[in-house]
Length: 217
Image 1 (spheres, rainbow, N blue to C red):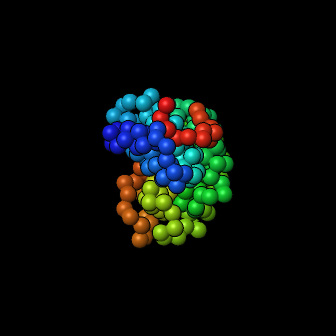
Image 2: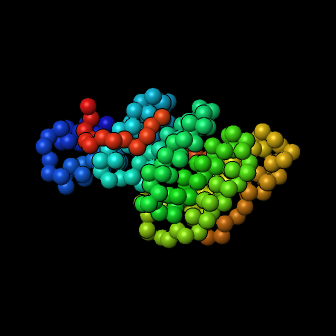
């Protein structure tokens, strides 16, 4: 993976036709996103952050604002695991703003669930409920085969899982008020949806870059 990333970077150091450079930046964004995930899961958190920033730069140059929003959502997840919900919320709002006019329903729904995660960590119940409702509303407009492959996992079952997870976060803070709702949502069946473990949460600052090149320097 890192060898492929280095090879793409070497091609970008050479003079390329605009169309070729655009495609190379798109490939670099995909490779760096995978490298960031690998680094995160193997415990190299700072290295993952560097790869995330590289993805953002490459996605911006490669006209990949939606993929960049996905990367910001991943960075926000890191902040949430580090108990920094305000930083996470700022990243999510940045992602939502940057991809507002190009993101399809599943991506918008996913971003709203990350927003809800931040609100849950802050104990902001009303804001969580609003973000969750917005996620459900966005997902209702989703159609098959109209969005990037990397968001295909986000269906009604996934929304139920993440919603249950956020309610569990609230239940840990205030069991009497939220435990029953968390238990109900986490086992809620979704006919026709792919099975998922109940109430699963997935892993997991910067602005949209102003770079004009995605080459590694």
